[in-house]
Amino acid sequence: MKNKLKPFATLFLLASFFNLQSCDEMIDEIHKNKEEQNYVSPYRGKYTGTYTGDSAGELIINVSEKGSVEITRTSLNSNESYYTGLINSSFNTTNKAPSGFMLIGNLNSKIGTWEMGSSKGTWTVKKN
Image 1 (cartoon, rainbow, N blue to C red):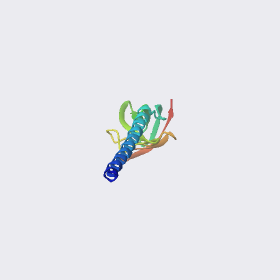
Image 2 (cartoon, one colour; image 1 turned 90 degrees about the vertical axis):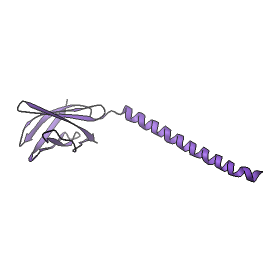
Image 3 (cartoon, rainbow, N blue to C red; image 1 turned 180 degrees about the vertical axis):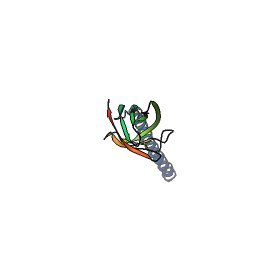
Image 4 (tube, rainbow, N blue to C red; image 1 turned 45 degrees about the vertical axis):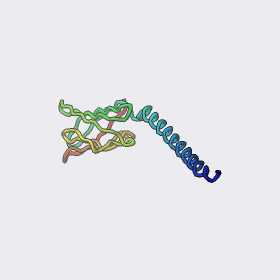
């Protein structure tokens, strides 16, 4: 009789172990989701400054609580905005304005370069 129950006992122990393992993973996932929901970007806020070089104008950078970024440039009374994100403190360079304008750099140093086709230059901002 003991030999017949041994496979069931082993199966029960294995099933219990995997259930506990799954519970731990679910709890870890819940904590991870809460952390993401409560995340506030350390770069949140409004930054203003200028860009110079082959073209010149003013910059406004708005960083949301979750880290999405709106970049607006003003040059000769025209505005252009585009949205991007941050990778650590650096701008995601896969997104560009419709004109091709793109900031390269980060919000730690608050300086960098910009490109728009063959035009190039530098930019600087300060946090308001």
